[in-house]
Each structure stands twice: as C-alpha cells, then as structure tokens.
Amino acid sequence: MSQDSAAVPDAARKLAARRRREIVAVLLFSGGPIFESSIPLSVFGIDRQDAGVPRYRLLVCAGEDAPLRTTGGLELSAPYGLEAISRAGTVVVPAWRSITQAPPPAALDALRRAHEEGARIVGLCTGAFVLAAAGLLDGRPATTHWMYAPTLAKRYPSVHVDPRELFVDDGDVLTSAGTAAGIDLCLHIVRTDHGADAANALARRLVVPPRRTASDLGHQRYLDRSLPEEIGADPLAEVVAWALEHLHEQFDVETLAARAYMSRRTFDRRFRSLTGSAPLQWLITQRVLQAQRLLETSDYSVDEVAGRCGFRSPVALRGHFRRQLGASPAAYRAAYRARRPQNGAPEPALRPERAERPERERATLGGERFSAAALGGAHALAEVADAGKPAPEGYAARLPETPVGRGAARPVLPGQRERPVG
Image 1 (cartoon, rainbow, N blue to C red):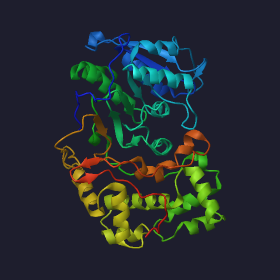
Image 2 (image 1 turned 135 degrees about the horizontal axis):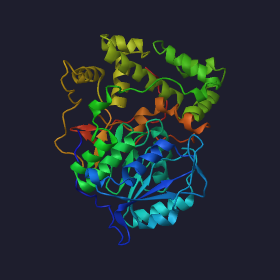
Image 3 (image 1 turned 45 degrees about the horizontal axis):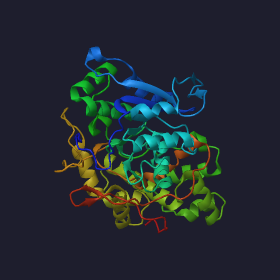
Image 4 (image 1 turned 30 degrees about the vertical axis):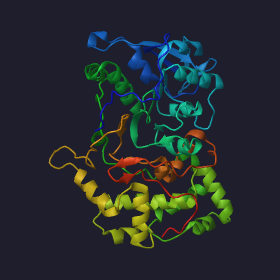
C-alpha cells in the first residue's frame, strides 16, 4: 500500500495571494459524462461540517459557451465562467467529452495561468487529456482511464503514463484513472488537506472505502480481449476476432492481411488507423495476455503455455513476457498463486514493499507498474469506443525508464520495428 507524502516537489509554485486552496473550481464542458462530473461536486460542494469534514467553497465553471449538455441529454447551466478560476487554489477537470477533440483554447489558457499562480490542478479520468493539452503533464507521471492510456501516451510522448494506477499525485498536478477512481483521488485531496480523520468521515458519508488498495480490486491483471461494439461493422473486426480465437496457432501478420483480402501495407495502415497499434505488436500483446491466463488458470508447463499461445519457442515467450510484464512466466505464476487468499487470510502483496517510496503518491492497480506502451496493443481497440473515428498516428512505444523496485526498471516494449513473433 502506498504511503502519503507530505513533501511538495520543488516544481510546486507558491500560491498567489488571491487564490485559496479550499476554493475549488470545477471546470465543466458540454458532452462530459455526468458521473465523473458529479464526483467533485459531491465531495467539495456539500457542507458536511456536522460530520467532521472541513468545508470547501465550490465554484462550478463553464469551460465553454452554454448550453452544456451531459450524457443522457441533460442540460446544465454553470453559475460561473472561466474568470472564476482566478480565485481558486484547486482546479478540477472531471472529464473531457472526446479524446479526439482539442479542448477550447480559452480553457487551456485559464488552466496554465492557474498553474503558474500555484493552483493545484486535478484531472479525473479523461480530464488528463485537457491537462496534457495545456502542457501541464509534460515530463510528469500521470494516469487516466485504462482504455485511453495508450492514446494519451502516443499523443503526448513526454507524459509518463501509468495506466494501472488508481491515481497519481505529483504535487501540484494530480490525475486519476477512470470513473470511481475519481472518488479515490478526491478523498486523497481531502486527506492531504485535512488529515485522515476528515477523509475517513467523508468516506463514511459517501459509503465508500476510505482508501482502496490493490487487493480490493481483485486479481484481474490482464486486459479484456473483447471487441468494442463500435467496430463490429468494420471489415477488420472479423479478422481480429479470428486472430483472438486462433492464438494457439502459429500465424503472422501476412496471414491476417490475406484474410482481410488486403496487401500487407494496406492492412498495416488500416489496422493502425483503427486500433492505434501496429498489427504485429498487437498480436504479440494478445499472445502474452493469453499466456497470462494460462499461467493463472492452468498447470501447463511454461513450454506448453508457449505452444498453446502460438509462440514458436519457450524462449520467445519468455522474452516477450518479460518485456511486457517485467517478470518471467514462472515468476509471474508463483507470485500470482502466492497472492490468492486462502482460508480468508488477507491477500499478500505481489512484491515486497519498497524500502523507500517516491515522494509523490502512487496507488497502484495490482501491485506492479506498467507503462502505457506495455498495454497499448489490447487497449488500443477500445479507443474507437469514444471517438467513433480513427486516433492519430504516431504511437509512442517507448517511455523513459524509471526505477520500479530494487534492481528493476520500468518495463517497456520494443519499438515499432517489426520482428517475428517467435
């Protein structure tokens, strides 16, 4: 379990005199999801002093011209505009309507100005895309909804995206993963401002855990292999579905291109435009995910797992597995089985706690840290669910390596230069 840090990074700026940390501005946009938008309104906008929760002052600001329509067709009227952000010491962007659209320039300017004047900037879920567009995540760690982490990583390669984290506190800029993780981050902000008792009191009122951990979130460390409904009509959907059903066979991208009745070049271009990932890298990632499933649910030897996942040799499986997950197949299986609770006992951590924790808060999903590139192949298919149109080219497959634990480095994938699967 990660530890709270009272240290403030050197990059944090002194708060301007007219700004106060307890004044929270929530920036709303048309088309934003109503659930994520409601989280900061509920946490910071209701007086719960009777329950021991210090009061915040909430300013709900329209990030663009009215009317603001949310999911479900509801229409909102925000009482403040962008000018109100100049008084806030905390600015929250709860979500952004589409990862393919650029946020309004005026809103980005207001966020940059608030950050320059020392305000704490918070992005919940896809709100991280707004922070990244404003340049506030450059060179920083960040997270977002796992479906969109690959897009964030490739569109903003200077951002260190960790898609398996509940939230990341980098001092004056904070981001959360999708949906309910926004509650975790808001509780963390209350805990940072007013202590554990206040955060626990608020959690009781909201009827949520005061601090979720990896064990609370279960063992599901691999990605869903299902396809978004939105690509069901695309000619490549049938080819992708066939590939997922035949991962135990040895085939390559040329085989997939032939099944799509396309040349290899055309297939590569179409596949990348649809998923944001090179077809070979996607195929390797899916084989590794299948290996994870077999290691977790079967007693097959590593050699047998390699054969059942379409790798030409156990050596090929071990190499790709270690690059994507930072551990050998045998070590992964042993760690996974050690984590499973027995006889109601609490679930031990996948790895021993580090002797030294980084200054910034890190609440991880599953006990290990992964780069967005390490997960990009499978998640890239989900990008189309939001956009309804292709994501931009230019997937940033490698991220800067930073220590993950003793003697280990952040796992990264090889570049987009293609190599044989096995």
